[in-house]
Structure formats: C-alpha cells, structure tokens
Image 1 (tube, rainbow, N blue to C red):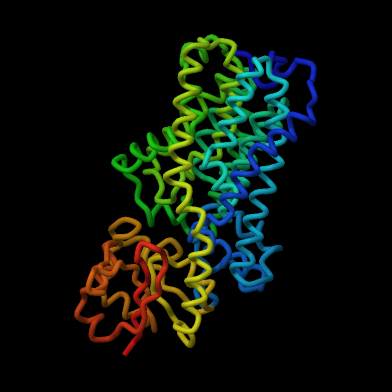
Image 2 (cartoon, rainbow, N blue to C red):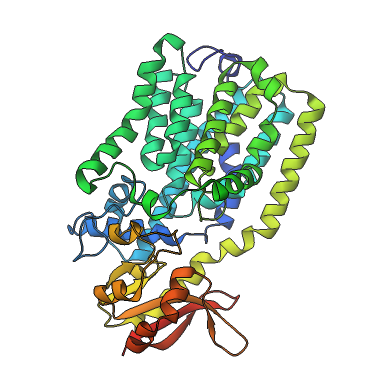
Length: 470
C-alpha cells in the first residue's frame, strides 16, 4: 500500500492553481452552511453553560452550587469556548457556531487544494465538490454550535497532510473531541506510513484520547464519558443509524467500489478502511439521537477525497451511476429534512423569551431537555436524562426513559418541572417520552405540582408544560 508519507500520484502532480481550487472549495461549501445557520442542538447549550462557568471562575460544573460533573462528552470543548463565554448563553452559542464554521472553511480550503492536485479527471473533482457542497450533515454540523465542526476540520486536515507524523497528531485530536473516533484514528495511523513504524504512529494518534480518559478517571472516577452511561448503546439503534448515516452522508455511496480501492492501495484505501471502521464504531456506540448524521459528519470530507484519489481505478459507468444516486439522495435530503432544521435556532430563541417571565424566581428546575432552560434563567437544573448528573445517569433506562420516580425527584426539591408534550384536540397534553409520561401520571407529582403555563416550541403543536410547586 502506498502510504501517506510517500509521494503518491495524488501529491506529486504539479500544483494547478492551488489558490483557485482552495477558494472554489470554500465558496462551494459556504452557501449551504449559511442557509443552515439557524440549525442548532439543545446539547450545545450544555457545553455553553460549562464554558460560562469556567469563564466566571465557578469551575467545570453544570450547576453553580452543584458538584463538578462530566457533562460534556468532548471534554476539551468547554475550555476552547471559555475565552468566548463572557456573554449571555445564546450569544456564546452564536460565537461557537462561528468558530465551528471558520474551522471548517479553513479545512475546506485545504481539501480543495488537495483535490485540485489529485491525478483525477476534472469531472470527478467536480462531482466531489458538488457532493460536498450539497451534503447536509457537513453544512448543518459546521454551524450547529457543537464541537462537530472543529472535529470535522481536524479530520479533514489529517487526511490531506503529507507528513505521516503530523497527520497522525492531528487525527488524534479528533478523538479528544469525539471519543468514538478513536477507532478511526487507530486505523488511519496504521495505514499512514511504513508498517515498521505503525506502533509509534498509533501511540501518537491515541495520545489525546488517552489523556482525556485519564483526566476523566482522576476527576470523575470513570474513564469513559458520562454520556456512555446515560445513553446505553445497543445494536438495534446503532445499525439503522449507521446505515441511514452512510446514505445521507453521500460520500460512502460514491466511494463504494471495493475492488477499485484494493487496486489503488494508496491513501484512498487507508481513508476508506478508516471510514469503514468508524461506521463500525458508530454501530457499537448505538448511534445518536441528534439529527443529520452527526457522528458520521467528521469523516465525510475525507471519504470524498478518497473517492477522488481512487477514481482512476474505478469503472466509469458504475462511478457515474453511484454519482447519480448520491445526487438524488442529496436532493431528497435537502428537500425533506433540511427546512425544519433551519428554524431550530429561531424556535429556541422564541422559547427562551417566553420562558423567562414564567421561570422567574425558580431556584431549581427539572427537565429532560436541559440546554435551552440554561438560556432562560440561572436556576440549578435537575437533568432527567442524566447527561450531567451521575446519579440519574446510573439509573436503568435510556436517554428519555430513565427510571426517575417521584420520590427521587422530590428529593431534589425542584420548584418547576418542564415536560415536553403535544396537545390533543381538546388541549390536553400528550407525553410521548417515557420519563415525562411517568412523572406526569404520578399522583404524588400531581399533589405537589400544578400546571401553570404551556410554552409553545414548534409549529407542530409541541411545547413544554410548566408545572410549578403548589
């Protein structure tokens, strides 16, 4: 296998208008990212809360008066955000979105330059550009306000760097932000140079992940992120998630040419094998509840680069067919899935504005979605999903079905319960998530709390029932 440090055909070509290719990549990916700039995820505000507390000198904790807890899976992310966190939560979230977008655009420029230098037909390069420009997971997660945009930038940079040691060092940083990417890092490092030096490369690529695990072990008493305990993995969710992610990511579709990759035996083979290993890790991790294939997004640009490198070994007819299928998938996803995601940020901002007077004076709030309430008030929050609470995370059940009973909840003494619901034709709330339905049906909760308000969230009638202590 021709390895990353070697002078393969993709890198020895005379650079043809490097700046033009780099600029073309930036201008290709920017429109969809700007169109999706309103997309965000509730968990992004969890990281913002940790970052704001770090910036204020409170420490690495979710609640000001609570313990230090491992509530952010990408352990370094709040520290990266802390210099930007001397502001209101939604302002900090906006800054995080800009940070992710800028990191991705810088990596996209390098990706475009590398694609421009590759020994492939201009049509193949244009297909790669078009698919990257139309890939919803890439665009949405570049501006989500989470760490995904930076992780995607690092993974992309690693795949285009010529020096194998630099490439492995950069690749390792992705696993510090996304722990499931350690499998990708190891496979990438194995193929990144001469086989006799594989072990030190793997050690280098694994080092940031190991450091984060050790810090967790010392600070929190467990090596794995708390989210792994709060969201138990299972193949029933992991397999469908990985399969759907492979389709909406587009890159695996055009790269699906095993014989061509075996014939290539170059960087494209390494990137394809690392990508396959990453999807296997996603299956084992049990997928993710967040939309737009978040766990797959970081490696999509590297797989499109592998497609360009391997294209000379592919059948033109089958490659064209795969490109047509990928383009059709891109169009379908953009038409069906993208519009709703564009309005998440506006919906959250409106929800926060409505919630502020309703939550005024609350000291402790219990909720399953704990991100947006942090933007509405400074109250302590009981996390019914356990993402920031080790005691609740250890309870049986999944992300939305933790066995939080009324007695446990009342022991935390919340002033307010926030329960997501849909209203039926008579205006009665319908709770679809297990833990919220259980608490709403509890006679003890009904005795202690009463509904005071309903906060609309989305156009489909969903919103949050506000239960105040009697």
